[in-house]
Length: 480
Image 1 (cartoon, rainbow, N blue to C red):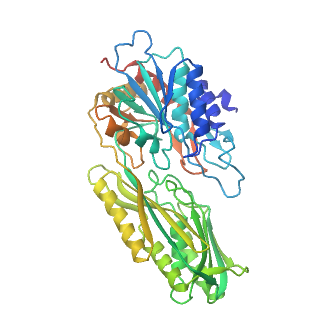
Image 2 (image 1 turned 90 degrees about the horizontal axis):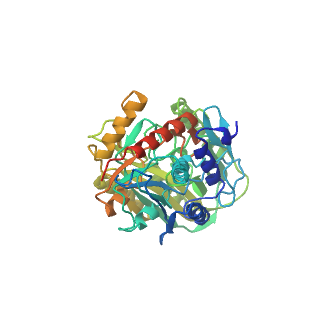
Image 3 (image 1 turned 90 degrees about the vertical axis):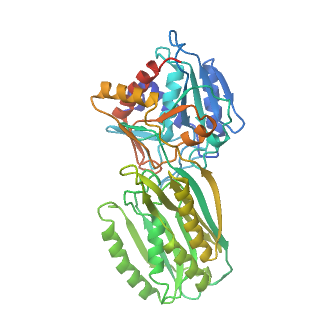
């Protein structure tokens, strides 16, 4: 089935047009221009602020002028991940999509449904002539996935809406009213290199599920960098390991699916035999959740330059000791991850090491605690540590007028109560709320699976459900 045949046709048409435009985080120039022209072609007031956020305003439909103004908000950028066997350039190519039963997915790459379905839905409201709504301000932010610099750069006074609907969550039976904040923790160091003294071995980890480093962090998925660290640690006592290179993971907000390490060891036969024994245990540990996990350990004939055994040991110990995964569950909200860390990226090339983490928490003090724990581990290993990109969480307000309205509409339309929740992802509501503290905010969206990984897919019936829900919410916004 072609995407153009899917319903609601307006959303899938706009999603297809959006996905034809490259939109990696921090490289959104093309999609900013695309959305700007979209608003201008509709004859609507369209502005681009100094950081690149696009704001499009649409007057209320007839009879809705007395209702509270609404901000519809989604982010323009997307996570760019692909399978290693796929040739694809996210900076120049549009996403290649296909329909698979009840799902839309991409061919070997992330789909961009996060947050492209939200963007396409706002576009559809803006261009429609038959949807009742109050005065609207469509806010399309940039760089949500790698720093939230769009939301951080949004100044007070640019918006006048009293209610913000963020269309950036991934379960269609949930109404989100709170989220985690985050902080980037980066460790780095430069080492002298020397001729490798032993026999060369390459370790490859691939086939992991990956996924969203917030929403999926509690599911027990494997982390390629952690698995590499375990295999390397296994030989540091008797193999005189020298690290030649490590290349694991990618973006901070994606659980690493693949990674490899090239090392020099005293005796490759002994090292591989011991590592294969540990490999069997790891495969057994993950058998129920990582059915496609593949670990390959083999000799590697090319002689290489390596860092010293002493420096290699410090790096391996740091990788083994650094916390990964859930740090603390919320004591106040059932089944909610409060604090976590993702060891997202490990890169060692020619003596240059970079180790990237994303720590998240809905409580600032524990966000700082896990960041400081990571800093302590890395500094003990002689690494330089930098904190950056810190952003606040979003404190829930469960009794707000918009939440009560949405609960009532959902129960009427779907015959059951929605789940009113807080999530462990980073949403822009907390940042925007810092400059607009009186604005009521809520986040919701259609069902999306595998966000931040090449397995990402959007559920077609859920998009239909979400679209109907959104339209009815807009038609029932309360009076000023």
